[in-house]
Length: 51
Image (cartoon, rainbow, N blue to C red; front, top):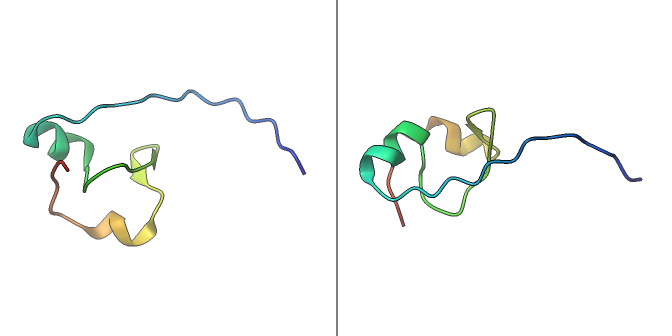
């Protein structure tokens, strides 16, 4: 089954520790929808960084 979904996609390059904290980035690559990681277990992690 094919679904047609209209969505805005934004690619964000996280380059600093400050950006990692702002975007709740736990390492890459990652996918977030509405600011939440698609991996439920990753949503409780509080150690953000770049890789």
